[in-house]
Structure formats: structure tokens, C-alpha cells
Length: 422
Image (cartoon, rainbow, N blue to C red):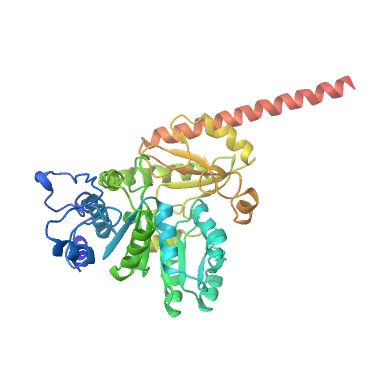
């Protein structure tokens, strides 16, 4: 009840204020202005009866840090305010959060419906692990809403959504699918990592449970792993119980780093989105690019839906290069202001092909079945000056085209030499 009251109050102020003050308008020890890192594994009580009441949840307090921790609790409270949720549960990684939710709410003989091109790790849970538990998994074409509705109507226990999708940036019509799920009493889970709470609030769209990889935009600095799950208390109590027993708890130092990162989320995302739009528009004009995925482009198939359910289009752009992996391997090393790495959401710009980032867990055949081209490159746009990122991308493409032209010239010369000799 306390979390619910706090969420209502938070809705009265803007997101830029919430990311700074959310969950932290409390009295810290020693009057510290910043959330302290509490590293104790256990918490002692002289009053045995009070200890017992805290253990049972009858009184507030802490018993053991696998169950709850003061620093981690502040992070959970902050996410409650950002997502306007009653309760939140933090995990050691984003995948721990995703798998924790799915294992909490699914059991033998039940059915889950999702889309084909979700994040590679999530796809592995659907394709490999849940079937071992006797859970029926149905994966549908992400953009075929009619088929999704038809499958939902047949009955399911959980509908799992990811929007925008990783790395193809497809947009799912959340309201429409939530309505279909509610008709059959299904629980709806949504991965909100790409959008962040600033751009999308799935709970307000009717979703029951929201998942974040806090490693990404929430943390924002590429130096910590974490995951957070948000929703109603009666649901989060089940997720919390699963985490406590299975042990994928977030450590306090990581919680502190994520808290610190969230405070600049609004500022970071403002710059990142402006640059993402600029890069996406340029990529649409680049001769070596086959297609561009960014919901902020008017021609994007999910643009109108994104406008209706999002407050911004995010900082991730993906594009498919002509020539596939051969062009990828020539282009990416030429970039000056970019990491070539498997993370996203950091202050630095990060480029990477799907086969070594979002879908590294999948085989070539699996990626092809999911519609993930070998020439697809995902860009996590950083906070650098937009003009510098654009100039960097342009010079890299120019060099690739130049070397390609030289190669064609040498090939033509060699062919003419052969013809003359003949």
C-alpha cells in the first residue's frame, strides 16, 4: 500500500524530476545526501519477537540480503515511481529478471505466446528451456497482430511482449494485444528495456508485469549488470519469492551504480534520441544500406502505433548492409567514435552485428529463421555530439565505397589484361 501511495504522488511531477528524486526522499544514515551502499549479508536483532515479525513481513526491516537489502530497496522504489507501479523486484541481470518472471508464472501444461524476433536470450528460453518444463510455447510473426489474436483466443496463461524489438525495432500494438489477452485471463508481460520508462509505460497500457534490463539505459554507463521487474504487489510478491529461493538477487554495489545512472537518464536520452533520428535519416540515403529500422521514421511500419503508445522513439537504430557480413566487417572498424561491443544503452555509441550482440546465442540457421540478416547492424547511440556521430558514420561509408571502387577497378584491369593476353 505504501508503494501504491508513492506512485500516485510521483505522477504529479515530471520524469526529469522523478529520475533524480524517485525513491530517495528518505532520511539516510548520517544525513547522507546519497543512498549508502549497505554491504552487510545479515541484519541482527536483540528483540527476538521483532526479528520474527520482520522475517514474516509483519514489520518493515531486513533479515538477509538475498531477500532484501537497503540499497537495493531504494532502486526498487525508484523504479516503482518511474513505472507508476505498486512494487518492484531487482535481479542480478536482465536475463535473470526475464527468466524469473517466466518461471514464476508458468508451469507444466501451461501455454505462453510471444513473438518470433524477441531478444536472442529470451528466444532461447522459449525455444529451449520452457519446453523442457512441459510449457507449450507459441511464437508468432511479430507484425501479424491478427494471428497473435487468434492464438491468444485459443487460450494461454502468459502473453510476453517486447516493443520495440531487439534488434529489428518492430513495434507491437500493446493495447490491442492486452485486450485480447484479458479476454482469456492471460497475464501480460512486457520488456520495456529499449523504450525505458521515459518513452513508454506498459502498465498504463494495460500490461501486468514490466521487465527491464537495468544493465542498459537505466544504468547508462556500461559498467554494471542488473534487472528489475515491476507490477502490482500481489504479482511481485510471487516474483520476489522466486528470486529469494532461486538466489538471483542484485548486489548492493550494483544497485548503487544503477541508482546513480538513472539520475541522468532524462538528459542522456534526450541527446541520444536526437542523434538516433539524425543517423536514421542519413542511413536512408546511404547507397550501401538496404533497409533502416527506426520507429521515428515516418515510413517505419510501426510509426503510427509508436506515436500512440510512446513518448519518444528511443536511442537504438538498426540497419541492413548490402553485401552482408563482408560489408559489416569492413565498415565497423573504420568508425572512430564507437565501441564494437555487445552492450547497449551506454553513454558511448556502440555498433555491432546481430550475430555477436542480440542473437549471439543463436545459430546462423536460427537467426535466418527469425528473420535476422547477417548484414544487420545495431547501433546504440551515445551522448556524443550529433554532428560528430554523423560525420563519423559518413566517413566510414565513404571509405568503404572508395575501397570497393578500387577493388572493382583492379578487377576490371585484371580482366582486361587477361583478354589482351588471350
